[in-house]
Image (cartoon, rainbow, N blue to C red; front, side):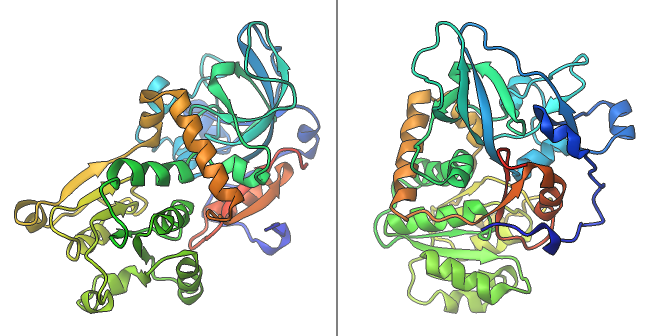
Amino acid sequence: HQANPKAFAQNMSLPALKFKASQFKAPFRFVYSHSSGVAASKQPVMLQNFTPGKPQPNEILVRMQAAPINPADINMIQGTYGALNGVSNGGARPIHDNGEFYVAGSEGVGVVEDIGDNVQGFQKGQRVIPARPAQGTWASHITADADNWMPVDEDIPIEYAATIGVNPCTAYRLLEDFGSHLKDGDTIVQNGASSMLGYAMTQLARDKGLNVVNIIRNRPDEAGLQERLNGLGASVTVSDIFARTKRMHDFLGELPAPKLGINTTGGDQLRSMTTWMDNDSTVVTVGGMSRKPIVLPTSALIFRNLQFRGFWLSRWVLENSKEDRQRMINELAEKIKARKLVLFMERWKASEFDLAYHEHNKDFKTRKQVIMFDEL
């Protein structure tokens, strides 16, 4: 889906982003700072021109083609992400001025433009994605250690290649690491189902023969979103308001009680979700978009033995091999080519970043915003 920038009004609750058109004619990157002096005088995301470094031994130069805007990217910019420094945030690195600025962006896709000495397994023109998170992907060029990159299938659409590394991988790992005991006909439930993670969970679970119960926020386009999610394979899609009513038990009908729950919102949604989950089931929290504390009924812990876990993909990446991640990426790419994994995105030219940024921060969005660095 190609976005029409004239169709989108800016969200005036966010600071305005202003960039000079001339800056996009040279190598550029979108940066942020947590320095009080910079933050007080500048907009949250700034555009900098720079000279890409020539690859040193064991390094490659990547020309970025596309990168999405993820909620975690905004949290990093705002300084509200759960882990912000050094290795704990997946390796985001300061770029100059005594660490005052950071390059934003956690995933994307590019092509190898130059190769340093001693690099094996890469060739010029090859399509690559970050092997580790927080590589500063909102940039026209990145020079980095070759081990920080990995090949991605050349035959999937560029938007899919740019977004395969976070949400589809999270959905894949949730089913593999917490749902391996599930069998055909079992049920899972997830809130926040209108996100890209929700879309991916719905389709990957359906492909395993699982029933999927989706909970979405009460919204103006609820009927259309229910139709989309059910078309992707969901058994039931309901609003968070309906899910908190006594009618929800009856609405589930003959579906088996969910054995796995995925929580991306927190707050009261999680408490209501646990009331109709199976005994001894597992709930995994991967986000907190409501920005409210998790509320749990005591009975779920004592009498029904529900297990509550957390999952962070960045930690999994750092604790597992690059080969394991490559196998996961390859399997997801095959599902994309087979149309077993369909995602919803809007493309924006790099010079339209301000519009994409504001569109991302709107309520009730159902598509991922992807910045096309090859399109100015």
